[in-house]
Length: 486
Ligand SMILES: Cc1cc2nc3c(=O)[nH]c(=O)nc-3n(C[C@H](O)[C@H](O)[C@H](O)COP(=O)(O)OP(=O)(O)OC[C@H]3O[C@@H](n4cnc5c(N)ncnc54)[C@H](O)[C@@H]3O)c2cc1C
Image (cartoon, rainbow, N blue to C red; front, side):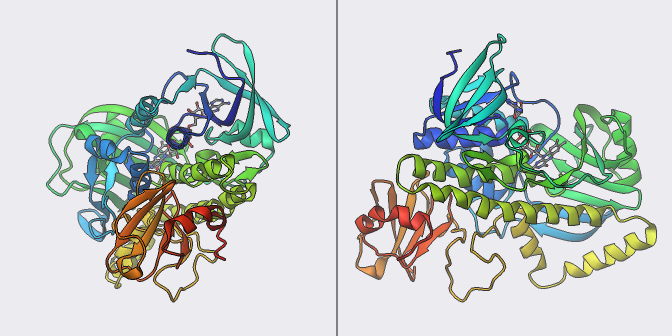
């Protein structure tokens, strides 16, 4: 392995899914960076099992989603069950996205694809390198890193991004608080092979709401099944007989026998959000910034989208396209997303963990009734798929226009081009007469569009009703990046 560079624009600490996604994007954008991880390879064990549509939309811009989709299974949605009875089904197939499914793929496989893509793009991971400390060193910082042979190296970086997980050293050194709770919730997870296939309708992730505790089953790639069960505090990773007991007590009748436990772990829930996602030249992303119940399969996905929000901003500031204040919008946009996420996953977990047969029956009746409310399951699908994320200044404010700044633009409406900005021009505007490319701006000419849209590299709307002349827009990109429209 080549020696660790002594100087870089961006030092990324942690090569989990979030650090890898950030490194892939920075490599694609041509931003000089160094990615270190104290481990020799991806962490083993049973972790995230699903890639949500919003993450697939982003990773498609990074050139990875087609490969991931080929490697995984397409989960069609979520179900809540009371025994065999379906209380509520949340289908994904009506979602307005090129990826209307949850991609069932293990976190390890996702990380392996990200790492391979990074290498193919010319990027590198410095494995076995541990961040020890850093000090501010205007305008950036100097970090000390222990190499695998025990030598300690200084790395001078303009920016540092802590993608170093829930026990983040970067967060501790920076002194950013991580307030929240550690509820008494422990989950046992097992990836298993079944002795016989399970039904025809097994492409959904299914929560069984039993009075004996929560049980979740989900198909995985390679013919495996994920089983998650709430467990008593202090439980060890589940054995084959533990998994069979969970299934027998809480699952549907006729669930096949378990032939093999491939991997197992336990997960102690914490619900925390970092007080700030940035402090001077230091940023936090992924589990370093937020952690919560695994209910709903949201954690890794939110982290990868943190990386998507930050990557283009670092590029814009380092290339002089936009002033440094653009980087303040990372906290402003992603912190509310993290807070909403923790509240949402906490609600799902509390619903699932209701105690007592009477309270459980009441909950089940309410859920079955809610499923009949017009738009309820569509709303839930959009939320779980993370397609409802909106960076409008007031997240919950109603809007009169079809388009507003901060809104996600579906790739089905405007096709992206990698991590370029996109200018979508109505065909009737008298502007460009066909699709094209102007520096960092992909131009799309569309029939039926009512106004000109400028879309950021992460797929959100930067400005509405901009000039249809690509040169005029390209020369004002820095202003648009900051949300200034005049
Ligand atoms: C049991 C379990 C089940 C889960 N289920 C789901 C799910 O279904 N869906 C979902 O979306 N999410 C799920 N998650 C959460 C998901 O695994 C995390 O959100 C995801 O791993 C976060 O990625 P990350 O890159 O932020 O951090 P991590 O994956 O924790 O990676 C951090 C990296 O930083 C490195 N590092 C740490 N300190 C240093 C240092 N000082 N120097 C150098 N390197 C360092 C570590 O070696 C590690 O590689 C689950 C998690 C667990 C544990």
